[in-house]
Image (cartoon, rainbow, N blue to C red):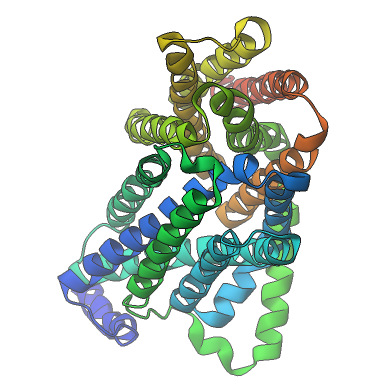
Length: 439
């Protein structure tokens, strides 16, 4: 009885911070958040896939993406401070403006438009993802507190809806790209201008939709009265959360797999679309192949998430995804050549599907692995995920103009081998720690 009274006394402290706490308002915010991210990223994702094939003068598209991910790497370290200052809703809304500016810059792509837009998008991307995680978790916790539901279950359900909707962005965005460029206008100014204008309208709709999110104030804001001390302590805490995992042997063994997850994404965006898809299917075929990639990525993400139950299942799933990627890389290196006819169309699409399955595996299993191994320092662990992923993506875009496809594939095979070796060694060490007899 005393526990019931204590809970009743505490609950108003939480509810007072919520503008709305009717059931539909919490789920409404998740519907809005998921739909807005889908709109923003279906436009951005498809635009990113086209950068290395349409902005080819002086490798403008490739270098601008390298600058973008280098900026993303840097700002990921300090993004939580910005989100804390702005609030999660304001950070998410502000973050969308970077994607709008990047799409707009593609309407008139020059060094004076693309480079500043890429730098700003790196900052915007870092705060939108930290803001998204904070907002979604805050909403889920509010829903659980209001209706006496299990917090972990609600967080899982809300995350399931968000990532399920978000995973469709590659499919939808690239189908739009395919539809607009299907008549072969991909190489013309009029075709790409129309495409980016449509994308700009879609991102604008996503930004407007994001503004309808309810404002949420996380617990612990009462300590703002000494802002200088609060900012200083937060900066110290954030610095520790980024550095501390690097002292853990488990993180050092996972970092190669994290870096590979970034490398393989950049390989698809920069090398695969330019050197495999475009020669076989043309610029207009990039949208179709990446739609296949996105569809298999989304399906595999959902399936792998359901199959994940612990470290052993993660080991098998990651190994299967790595095996598929190895087949694609060896195929390109040893056997693949441009072919006419139906096989010439089928081969790039089959590769896209296999690469999508591998990406879906890495997206789900890396998050699960970090959540299992770093329960007491998840913020620091996920900070490492973003830092190493974005850094490796930036490296690919910077070196892309100077190395051949075959050289890049060799690098990918070596990176995959190192990543899997480190991961398997980690799983063996963890299992040994759990199951070895204690004296």
